[in-house]
Length: 411
Image (cartoon, rainbow, N blue to C red; front, side):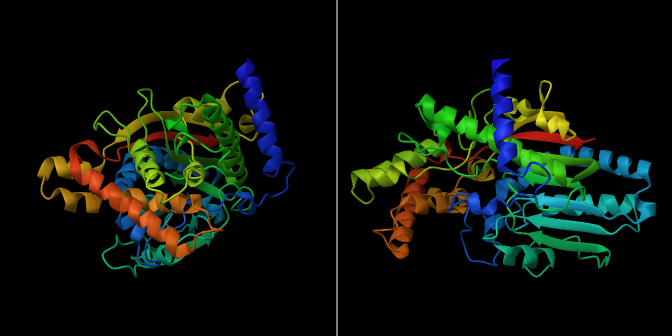
């Protein structure tokens, strides 16, 4: 009972902060800087090209997404949506460069078109305003070499592609306009880090229970805020399919699993601390290097739907299913299968850890005393050291993916 009272208090605070009372909340201005700033050449599709495991996570989520889609199509059939020329709107939240989700988006669009041959289909891509939007549109409009062909390749003029640079902490579409919302590997990012993590760079790696509790509380409020905005956007009968980074019942999380001896995030902290010892960075900079993220347990994902008086229930949302699963690191599997040059393997693997983490290391450095060029050089030095570490023991370094897979509907 005490836990539910605390959760309801978090829910009320989140509601006040995120647009309760019918007013749309714009969230972007209140979010921390340095969150997943794109790394690599803009417009090149670098993120998806170097994040192969995320394709596998999206594939793992396909059954959940297609189940959700089936329910949405049934709800639309019951209300005669197609005969009323009601568009079918799909939103890909936290899309990055739209590459890893493209195979699934192709399948979803094809299924909608098969069920409703004449319906206008809207595919809206959402991410931060600082996202690599050049790559998004190059992929979608089939101008990116060697990329998967998109759902526009067939020349269907009744498919419309839109983009939103509004954070998913804000409302991205008008009320009651979304049929199916999808997100993979995005909603673990918090609005901001609630506190520094003095003994680590990720909350789950810290031995400080106060730090871990602060992140859990921030994450609980942020999760309710995210889902509250989706509840406003969804049509009645609409659904969400979400793959969230998680900590599973075995204590496994991204880069820490039973399959390898080393934990990625612990290794990050160890190597970053080495740069403190070598006076390359200061201890204050180490302390200020914190990932503003939280890997939620399945219980944390489900908590806002439990008990009476839940804000999400009041908004019409209901949790249909949820489970955790581990997807193996494809780079590690290839090494175990084929072996080869350990350094070449490490040089291939490490960029998949850098695409999403680079900006966090840069943002931890003191910009009042360091030029951007100096900060970039320090982070380059760090990742070169990580490459050498992996090359020295490739069997024990990997980035296995641990996610919760959630199906949520709106009445």
